[in-house]
Length: 445
Image 1 (cartoon, rainbow, N blue to C red):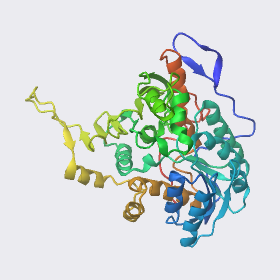
Image 2 (tube, rainbow, N blue to C red):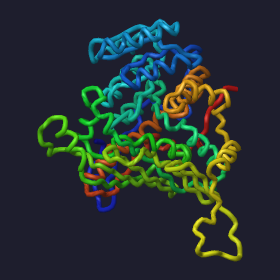
Image 3 (tube, one colour):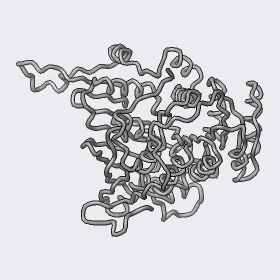
Image 4 (cartoon, rainbow, N blue to C red):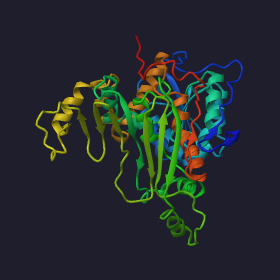
């Protein structure tokens, strides 16, 4: 935990920003040499990794060069799938360090990491040290130290380190972002993004039940990025604004101990994570964000996703809708609580068609829906990553996005364990956050 000496005062817990090592430069808008046919090595081919193998066979400009997992049967299954698609992939398995051989293989340009959370960072660091770009499933890092290690290694090796946050490519989020960038909502001043997902049907499906174990051992927002990432893009985080502080609050763990007791038959008295965790954040430009985490209760799936602007609003859950400011008539009906213009249904479809996101061509949208992956957003994420690597362009999500979105886990824990006090959010760009004005996508000329 990187906390400054004499860190705690009456108002905020300070976090340390280590100086940039000599000779390093930031990775903002970094362009690597173009790779015409990206050789991908996939580490971890359980449910998420196998889905990535399947999708990537449809993405132009790449091929799966290698597959790795501790379970040999998983590797063999995916190698056979690739062979049926005309791709000959190398296989690495049998130990928890088999990934090292994959990272050292010259046929691999990009290491795509889909393991359990604890293995994300060691694999990514090893891959970058051996000359590979990396893409890491969410959450990509769990601690401040891990975030800084990824930032420093990416800067020193000049290799991309991308967070695989698929929700940034969901159709509603893509269009709402385009509307925000066009000024349809005025200035975005508040946003909400969360992860409400009842995992009761899924707990036992995780390898060695690692995800429930993580919730038992650690407190805080353990899975912030699905809701948080898309709203950070709309707020131009480290592209004209930056996160400065947060404060968190949680419930007691009511359901967690019951889940452990059901599986072990023993009383559980040491479950750390609350059923619901709420985190409020503030930015340097005076904007606010609300993030929630709840995987323990039976409320419906909900990433919240709300953008609140000076002149408009977009929200995805429980129903997709956009609200734009309307002129107030002289005869005000004080009983009318719905006088703002709300777009839903066909009206909303027509409005959103007007603001189609520039990356979402009709051809890409059709292909994404056909290939799938959470409705197509996984495919769009993979497609954009490979497109940028093919053309030597900056990636849509850089290592600072990764660090900013993932550091919420430890910072929320620090706030909770110190009586829900504010905690400073470090500037992972080390002062470069205002150099680029606004989030944007890169395109080949």
